[in-house]
Image (tube, rainbow, N blue to C red):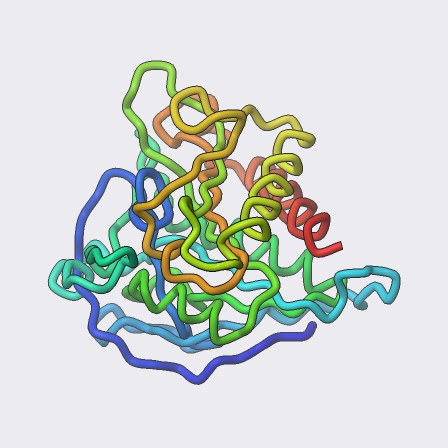
Length: 282
């Protein structure tokens, strides 16, 4: 497996506890930059902001893949230690467009208690393994699910520093609106640079088509036809690379919560996302 590494950076983080995603997940999702490769961030330490490379895999890269050698940054939203470190993740950081946001948030969960951060981390790693098997270089914004952060601005920096061909932030939503279900893919709008224009919208459509082709339903409560232009998500605003944020579904919806909580369900999400990324890169 090929991986890109970025030098670890220590960050102080702060907390903003949300039922949904921020700067990237739900109504907002996190953005951060360097996460450590396999360093396990201790919840009692400063947030890990190192770049995590893709887990080792025995799969042989496919020389036939036109995407081989390209770089993808995967950003599993939130982190498992955020909830116990409110001071760190609540501090304000740049969010683009002259705004600031809390460093990160806790994310949401199903009514039964299955957490979004765990879902994001599992799906991202499965996506990474699938891409690595095709010879694609994979970088993660965090290397474990027990650390704090990294902050939303640092997550964006990771993709920028890796000169990524595509950056995909993986989340799940927590809407309590009656009947709210389905996935949506957010992208920066209006764009702040060339990469946030046509390249990001093309990536958003590729992810949307990959999920829809695998049987997933587009959102009934946000965006249109599975696409959601956003101006308030730091990870998208601060990116200089083609970047999107995927809200895989609503964890408060019973049917989607059941799928997200199951290993086969997460594998299906991962396969669809990986296919969308590869289609974009190809």
